[in-house]
Image 1 (cartoon, rainbow, N blue to C red):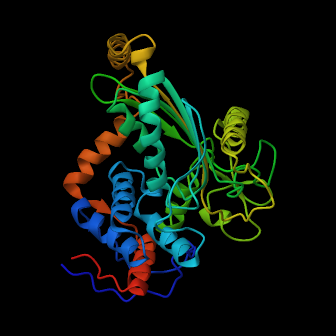
Image 2: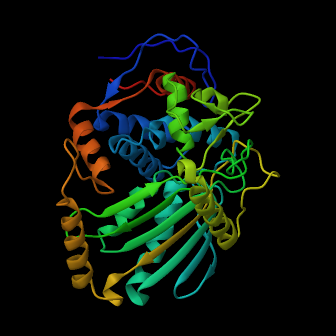
Amino acid sequence: MVMRIVPKQYSPTEEIRPDQHHPTIMPTLTAATLTPFTQSLFEAAGVPTADAAIVARSLVDANLCGHDSHGVMRAPQYVDSLRSGSSKAGVPLTVVQETPAVVVADANWGLGQVQVYRLLEKLLPKANTLGIAAGTLRKSGHTGRLGEYAEFVAKENMALFASVNSHGSGRRVAPPGGKEGRLSTNPICMSAPTSGAPVVIDFGTSAAAEGKIRSQFQKKQPTPDGWLIDSNGQPTNDPGALYTEPRGSILPFGGTQAYKGFGLSLLLDLFCGGLSGGACSNPAFPLAGQGNAAVFVLFNPALFGGVEHFLKESDGLTAYVRTCPTVPGATITLPGDPERLAKQKRLVEGIPIPDGTWELIVKAATDLKVPLPV
């Protein structure tokens, strides 16, 4: 079936109010259809083919894993930043400083997924030799889903710590008791290999990732309790509160103990901005943001307790946790399980694209003269 849609005229990143009426046009597309279409958008925006393939595959994989907040809803945003010049296509990764165990790199505002993989290619041999390797990025485009990189290095039996901030921008998270954003959502990712699938945590230090709120905004659906406050510091379920003046804020994770999410976010912001040579959250930067400053640390178990020992312990602990007695109706789920289950389902059933997201994608494709998927 050919999608024949005349879109309303929105800019690729325009924020659509949940209460605005739009016709139901939500398609469900297979990954095999969505990936080359997304790649063609980036190629039409001037991205080299190999780089466009990396970014398209990354975004669609995020959708497959159930993380629509980091999926193709980002494609119009990336295209818009490329066309405005705030992101750059085809730029190199510049090594600013390097030691046997450290790489400090400037991404030159290149596409984040491309530059992260270039950094990891430099870190993997260092970790193989020394047992540990750390790298940073500054001036990077949006890096996408951090769990993707954890899964990548797990194939080499590597453990990972990673985090990004919003390079001074994206200050949408209020400290406990505050009513104005001071930090970005500052995700943390950690992973450990097993002899099967790795254990991967990847979550924002806010109650929800900004992309998840944007996803609710584009789907015209309310956010759950505990995610947002309005400009007066009062709880709200309206995702539009984050995008319209006077703006509300996202809460740190932790509920009544939000100081835990806030404290973790503060330290991660300092690590990412301070170690990379980039920026921490700062009112000198625009709120909307441009990309990320990042920290990646790889651990090679072979040069610690040994790979065999590590896998024995990781297999043993995960099996032990999975056999925990449960209350009626409950199932033990380990970090990484939801993503794998979502991927199995969406590889069969396809990836649903919400109305608001699809309108923005159609607008970007129309502007770039890219045919819509068949």
